[in-house]
Image 1 (cartoon, rainbow, N blue to C red):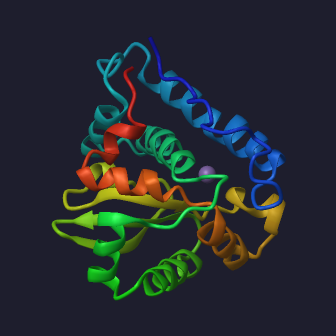
Image 2 (spheres, helix red, strand yellow):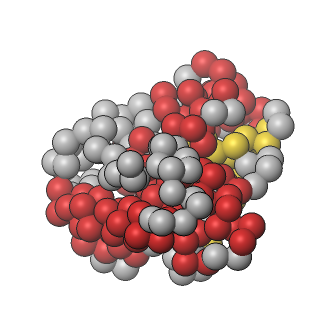
Length: 207
Ligand code: MN3
């Protein structure tokens, strides 16, 4: 067995101009797929062959294997990101809505903070809404770095802020991409599900 490229949970043209089919062709079909291929090539014939994706990421980190860490973490990050998107606009409901109010004051304040983090993050990386104990927090991580390897960072929601995530549709206008997705393309049902602390498992896979 080896890792595989997960199918998108919607059709590539489901988001119209917000995220074009061409972006999915490249971002999912080329970039994400390349991370899968490179991870498989790196673990083949090693004692990590057959390990779960999350185990490969943690092992690469502890061994200081930056190449394997980058590729395997990007497999997980993208697998999680696709699930954070919904072609049908949603709003946070129930327990998630209450926790957002407790942690940020209001949904709008949370979205403003998330936007500031995502647009202000220098160069490539990922913006995150995470659960830390009973609090929700917003942060960002550089390059391929991932909540998978941090205690106290239970992943709820991410936006990819690498240029390849938005360049075809928004060119260099990262704020427009972040605005558009936060406004009409977030799967808040998926975000709410991750309040159980099992978010890492939702983008994990067997090797
Ligand atoms: Mn990406």
